[in-house]
Image (tube, rainbow, N blue to C red; front, side, top):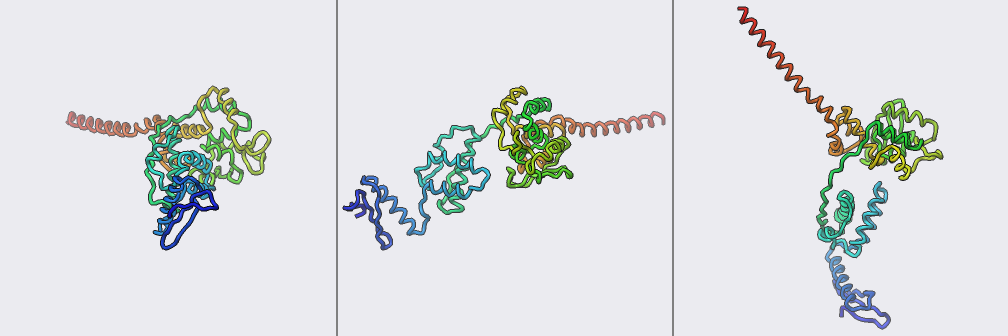
Length: 346
């Protein structure tokens, strides 16, 4: 009898015979309909194990294993947030029951780019479950949304001067340094003196601190060097410090908003200092290939965002063929004139 009751337990018990063995387990429910579901699931799982197939795994097992393996990843906080969201919608499922339809039916009320980050984390987990753990046979198709390209936000030198003047003293240095080097906020705030060589006019961002996971050499122009000279001997390790002389951990949003208001700027984030740096470079003739190397980008697509700002440089470049053609025309007219004069005189 597959399901039976015992005198010493209020629950239904399951009896399963497989490969000549009898297995008895409590279903931990007093309702026979629920006990039948437990029995069917247990019977199927034991059959799969008997066939040498992988054990059926719960979503919670996959989530916890994935977080454990990615604990040292720089984006682990974002991954945990994404998985906590999926936990609300997939937490009741075995991972082999997660389908393309299940994922598509889950509402993600975010902008396309943000929603795609949530889907990417889920896809990464399922890929690990298939390739690394052998928990599932295939990964469902996860469709990404089309992302709207956003306009690059940058400011003029005059606007930048107003912003820096409006910032507290301790933030002026890192802001100007970001404008002159293109360093991201965390890399600028966490910059330490061992990463700086003033004689060689170079700083370094190590791969474990870089977004692209590769070391970045940062050439220092005269303005960036002056910022560093002004910070010398203030702290034994960190270049930039707060009012109390301690390393700056973060930028207070209220302080930043106040500086923007005082400078007459709107919709401008600290990361837009990097966009401004890149925009200034392109507008002053830096090639996209050079910009890619300076900014530590691995993909050329990332620097193509700034291509439209090189119009003045391209106009000058466009003159190359015009100048050449004009020279050729001038030589042609000169030859024609010489031939005409020779024929007229003879």
